[in-house]
Amino acid sequence: VEVVNAEFVKSSVKTEDCPSDGAPEFALVGRSNVGKSSLLNSLVRRKKLALTSKKPGKTQCINHFRINESWYLVDLPGYGYAAAPHEVRTDWAKFTKDYFINRPTLVSVFLLIDASIPAKKIDLEYASWLGQNQIPMTLVFTKCDKRKKKKNGGKRPEENVQDFQELIRDFFETAPPWIMTSSVTNQGRDEILLHMSQLRNY
Ligand code: GDP
Image (cartoon, rainbow, N blue to C red; front, side, top):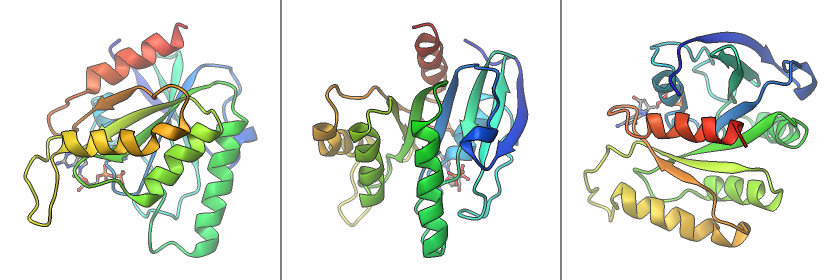
């Protein structure tokens, strides 16, 4: 399940513009600053594969990366960027939701959640939307290496992970698979790649 080859293929502004070769794909999505670029780079063991603009909310693109010449990792723009104008946020929601619903080759959405902080409303809304629309989802908890307790009642990553799953339970018939990760220690990296390979072979 190692990544031997990773190449940027294209940025699409609409679902219809995405690659049409029928190869299976996994989308990475999450709040701005959740650690999505770091995780993507850690998955492919490269410093700068994630070409997505670092101006969150500015790039409204679906970015396809071909892995091992047989499947795709898809980088979606981060949501919840406070400084983004309202219409940008609305567009973002429309365009990603269209992609989730109308992309048959999408095997699973990997929803990134920051495990170093308590659950955020926008993440819960996002997860529940995916659940209610029965979009296959895998929860990827990021920054699990951040173990220092914050003074203001901060919890350990394990506790935040538990809390988050508890809060979204009602929106899913069966609890979504979940993986704890860190791009600093590479925790969870092999688990994600293994999980993706298992999902492709169903
Ligand atoms: P993105 O906006 O979701 O693409 O997030 P980035 O990958 O750019 O990361 C946002 C910030 O979180 C950066 O300062 C990273 O160094 C930091 N970060 C990302 N992943 C981790 C992680 O696993 N552990 C820790 N401690 N920090 C991380």
